Amino acid sequence: MLQIIEVTEVRIRLAEGAGDDLVGWASCIVNGSLFLNNIKILRHEDGEIHLSYPAVKSRSGSKHFVFNPINRETKRALDEAILGKLKMQVGRRQSCPVRKPDNGRMPSGCGSSRRASPRLEGP
Image (cartoon, rainbow, N blue to C red; front, side):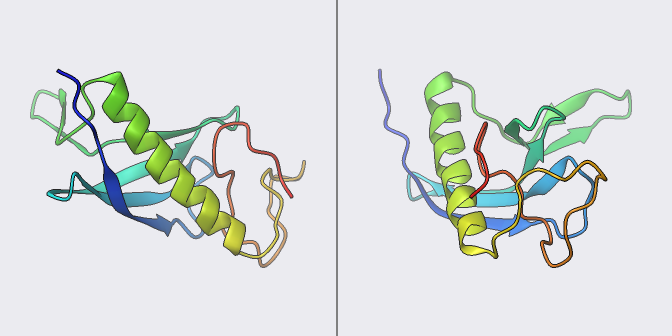
């Protein structure tokens, strides 16, 4: 049975002054009835953006997800909604490069303007 996933009310909190890999956190509502919060937005070394879902570690060190998508359609819907909102939000911010210059620092005033989606290039 194919279920339609509707992701609404996406909110992004950019991580100002965080490490290079953390872009921010997202929250959203799924199908008008489920609130998901503390979804990390991370950037790989190659610039690829991905989402990481909240997890807790057991005493034995095992990682247990609080929630996460269990099929491709749900993952795609969450990725499109959250990364689309990130792209819009970053686009409204001041114009800054999406990649750090060779010296590893963003120009002053750029905060954490980050790449909005995989392979997105700057203005």
